[in-house]
Amino acid sequence: MLEQYIGAGIMLLVATAIACGMVLLTSILGPKHQFPDKMEPFECGESQLVSPRQRFSVKFYLVAVLFVLFDIEAVFFFPWAILFQRLGVFGLVEMFLFILILGVGLAYVWIRGGLDWE
Amino acid sequence: MEHIPSPTVDLVSLAPVLVLSVFAMMVLLVDLYVKRDKTLVIFISLVGLLMTAISAFAKFDLPVHSFNDSYVVDELSVFFIMIFTLSSALAILLSIDYNKREGIRMGEYYSLILLCTVGMILLASSTDMIMIFLGIEIVSICLYVLAGIRRSDPKSNEAALKYFLLGAFATGFLLYGMTLVYGATGTTKLGLIAELIREEQIASKPLMLMGIVLLIIGFGFKVASVPFHMWAPDVYHGAPTPVTAFMAVGPKAAAFAAFFRVFAEAMPVLSPSWESLLCIVAVLSMFIGNVGAIMQTNIKRLLAYSSVSHVGYILIAVIAKNSLGSSSLVFYMLAYAFMIFGAFGIVILIGRKENEMLEIADYSGLAYKHPLMAISMSVFLLSLGGMPPLAGFVAKFYIFSAAIKEGFVTLVVLAVLNSVISFYYYLKVIVYMYMKEPEGEFQISLAPMTVFVVVIAMVGTAGLGIFPDPILYFTQH
Image (cartoon, rainbow over all chains, first blue to last red; front, side, top):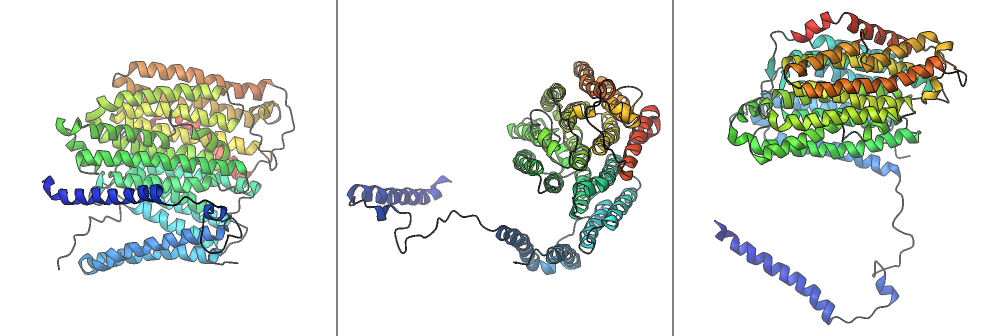
């Protein structure tokens, strides 16, 4: 039973060897020229103007949370759409109830002003 | 194209959940159009809870199993629904004046309490571990928000964050325990698990035993038993007082209902492996809760530690696992609801806008200025301690007799000893009220709804203590 995994095992070993070997070879053979620009986190392009560790406006998080919520809705829709005919009327009604409940949530967010950016 | 068979849908037995969910959504939407005066929102919430309590009796010939054996309507769940609706209604009534005073104007508050109650009903009625997990999640998420609803108060924020982080961690343990039990038995249905573990081969699997330990950790956290109680004092202290009272009663009762279903109903065969563990947890909860309470100077923290010790007593009902155990569990939770809401009602009444008067020293000399209030507080505290003829005594008596019947004499002796210890700190508050000179001025405005709750709690505490028979009759039949 294990024989069928031999190929995968060899593949794994070779891949690991190549990856480790490359890192090892560059660290042995590569030129070691160090100067300030090279040690910066982003060596290419413009030097950075401000630190990337800033605070983000809380609005972004709100949008992210709402996105996740309604994204889950889509996740539920796909299997339902595929099995639509086999689920019959029961599935249709259930899905409408699900959308209704989500709709209440959307209405709440909308009227409360959760979607206003300003 | 054959149809996928739909599960055995029984909307009538699901009626309490449906009714309450609809009302919770209605509250959410109505609140969008009322600005300052929340009377309408509160009214709808209370009507919703009343309808839920009525709809719990929609089924006859109990128990009724539905949804492929993952939902059950039986005496236990109907009784628990009564306790949940009662505690949520009392919490909402307590909140009316408190929220006005403290400036909590969010209508979501009431909607969250209703949704939390939906979770509690699911928790007490589920016979499938996935449903139990979902119930716990619904309850917990609502409580995280409720604990932090005073957004501008750092204490409230601390409570919410601590509760959330530790709660999420504990939910992980619970879920992991469930997966291990599923790994051992191949099912999440409690009824099937009860049958499968009769076979020695499944019952002795290490997976099963590991699963049980993790389940105890998960549930132990949700009911705040030692050694998983560390969150309780901080969260109880930081949360708004009506929410604290609500947390100490409703969600705790719901977690105990699930605890009882998983351990006493589904796994009595395995009791040799979980009994001793639960005994240790129970004894530790009693001792550490009581000793911790002795050292507190803040009334909310004192009540939090005392609720940890009460968890120890209630666990004895789960350990007893007989029918007397389940009826004494229900009776205890009902009595506890009255005592806790009464005590927190007084705590709210004594506070005022700038100063919540939460130190025990603030109660000095209360008896001279407001004798009625001091008497009520004394009654609630003595009942919590277990003084006859109050509700707390009868409740403890039935739990202890259930345990004695199963032969847990040492456990009961330790529990009685602990009741004696607990009197020390309950009496300390009473000594402050009756035997010390008043330190500052009391500025008590008797908010009508809060007084109403205290009166209900008083009637319940005294009534259940003096005439326990009718309720006991119901719990046993």
